[in-house]
Image (cartoon, rainbow, N blue to C red; front, side):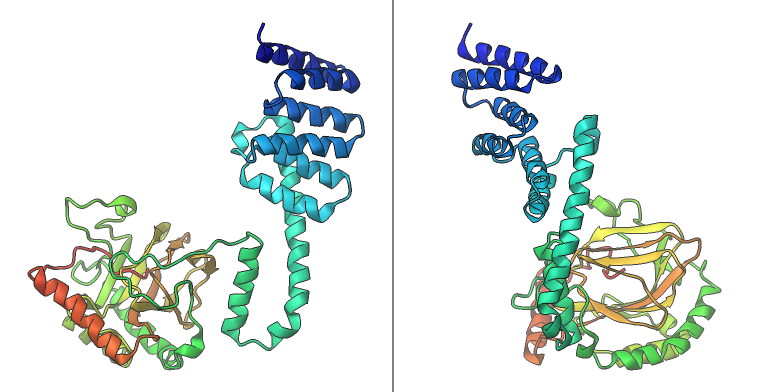
Length: 402
């Protein structure tokens, strides 16, 4: 019998001894097994369990350290270590250690009953730790936070969430055009950067009145067209379900930079309001402006937009309960007449879980951090690519923005 077989036999005998309530005998068997095979992680785990059963937590921690030196990502060793720290009264150390273990936890369906109970406790203790740490950090910065502007306070709150592992960083991932040097991790922009939002919101009633007239003819296919309209032969990925579907449709005022004269004539006050907005003028690409119509029980999958040189504006017009919108880490509920500006090159998604239709006025604007010269050159580059390629029509079936 080789040394590994001897170690396995001693380990099996130790497991039987633990089950019989004989941790001292188990300890002796495991120490003998480790003399034959000191690199077997299960032996160190069982040795830690024996020390713990004997009321020797420091020795148990030492055994777990040996196991983790051999396999730093060993979930059971990390979980047991956190549990030991917890039992020793080191609540904060245990809370942090539980978080490390939970990052490596298998799916709940793969856990046996005792481990599942231990994981449930780990989640509870880690959540308590995060709550207490959050309160402590807010106390540390409370005075400074009250002096911050709204955008600074929002960024600081997100910084704390990321430091605590409750949020992850999302970055711009434009599908086609990435302009370097622009802020890369702002989901929703501060209203103070867009003083014209007040003018836009003041027009809500007029826009809603024109929308109501349009919705009476919603079934007219010449007016409401599928928002996703990829041609055959392209990989659809997440858009397969919504491609050419009326569940998400648009009443276009501007589409790929081209005005829809009939729709503008039907909604003259909306069109006039849009004409005052700082929209990009990029032939064949921008501006885009529309009533975005999302039918009941419809979800728009997570995706990113085409270019970070633009931002997207929403003016909610018809918003039943059960609708929501997420950009990166931040989830918001639309409120009629309250506009916002967001970066659609950061992963975003929307849903309408209600039994009624949701409608927003959606349009794009230039990124406010671009100079006039940059905007002109960006336009030249984008249109130059199209001219070089023979002025091909857009291949993207989605304008972005939801």
